[in-house]
Image (cartoon, rainbow, N blue to C red; front, side, top):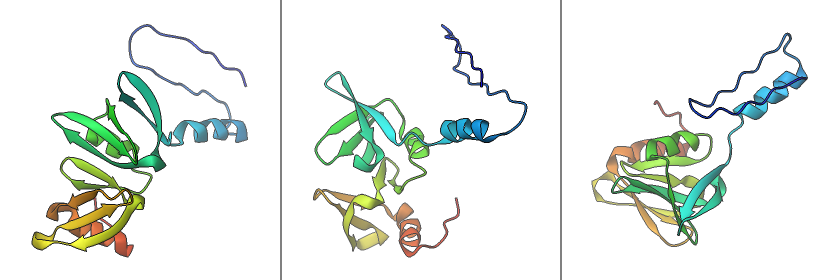
Length: 149
């Protein structure tokens, strides 16, 4: 397979795949292009770090800035919470409030609270409140029921 690489100095990045027949080689390229990255970029003290999805406990937006929390660090990301939610949609992340996304795999215990809220204790001991707006959807996910978007 022949390919051409061209760097542009302005405009939007674009990838064009041209083929005569859809064969295994083309399918492999398509599969690679469509595979989720499974990694995020975060910044701490002017240093960028690569963060595995599996290491993320939760993400939240504070004062229009989005932060990614791991077991032992906090990183700033340039992504908005909505963009982060879209990136993480293939793994067990859940929007638990207007300003927060939680990794369901990192929840140690759950406790029902007044006003139909849920207290989720994470594996590092932090407590995240799942707001009543999202609590019923969260309960459905835990029961394995389908959730309408």
